[in-house]
Amino acid sequence: MKQHKRWSITVLSLVILLMGVLMGINFAVDPLQYYRKADYPPSFSTQQRYQNPGLARNYDYDTIIIGTSMTENFLPSYVDKKLGGKTLKLSMSGATAKEQYMIAKMAIDTGKVKHVIWGVDYFALRGEPDRVRDEYGPFPFYFYDKNPLNEWRYLLNVDTTMDSLKIVGSRMGLYDQPAQDLNLLNTWTNYTFSKQVVMKEWDKVKQSQPVTSSEYEFSNIQHNLDHNLISLIKDHPEIQFTLFYPPYSILQHRFFYEKGKVLFDNELAAKKYLFDQVGSWKQVRIFDFQQESTITFNLNNYKDLAHHSMAINEYMIDCIAAERYLVTADTLAAFNEELRKQVESLQLENL
Image 1 (cartoon, rainbow, N blue to C red):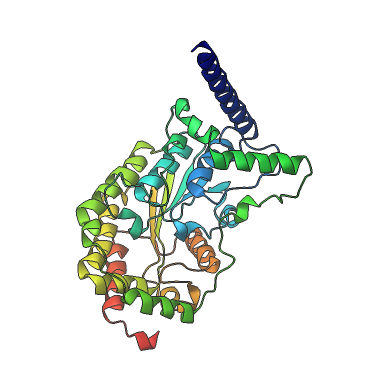
Image 2: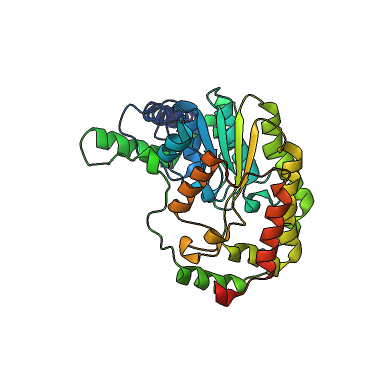
């Protein structure tokens, strides 16, 4: 029994020692730059829910871009050139409103943020206000809370360890790991933007199962706006918020309309609700690009029903700088009515 006990204690001690060594290596290398900005040429992770917290904590900026994949094609350098400031893009592909709130709040809590550019995406407003995307793996809440004891999940993670070893190997000259340009991180360079691609996607989604209307109930949309956007704006009157509705192709709105008219009605109602709540606040500007037919009817701008090319992102920044498509008490109803007319009268053969 004594020999068995000594063996157990030895094994347990070795396990604890190994865990400590791995945690020490991962803390020192810190591949996601969660604890400090890298003093070596970094290789950024494309897993945005994991990478963004380190960027928000440790990089220099006064402007942040918040949103789903609809904001990935913004170039921070272009935003700086047109709007001034120093911009950090914190996009999350497929992000829910709650996920956007968490990364925005983390950045704001650093005290660096003076300006937030936020893409208000209808897809993100569905479901409960605390909804996160965990169908591809658990959401890493330990990066977003303020309890350092939870960070063992990062420091003892197999992927973290593999990334640390790659970085160490690169620093030792064992192989090349080219540095990435943060300005270009997660931009789309390998997609085809064309009418043919979009129409093929349209034919496919028409055969898809009906959208779950309950997710898009207006109460869900309202609660998401209240808890995950409006509350943050209200808590920070010192920060300028530029909100915008990204220009999906006209087929995306038509998809909602055909799958259930209430889905499209609630999309327009959400715009009115948000403007009614914050549209008159001095710190808030709202821009609506969704009724601009020169963009949305030209399917060569898109790689699917919603996602447009970088040229459109640059055009939006130009318009924001010039205050074009600004939503006011006068333009709100006109913009919504124009989009409704476009969707209801759409003739596919005329696209």
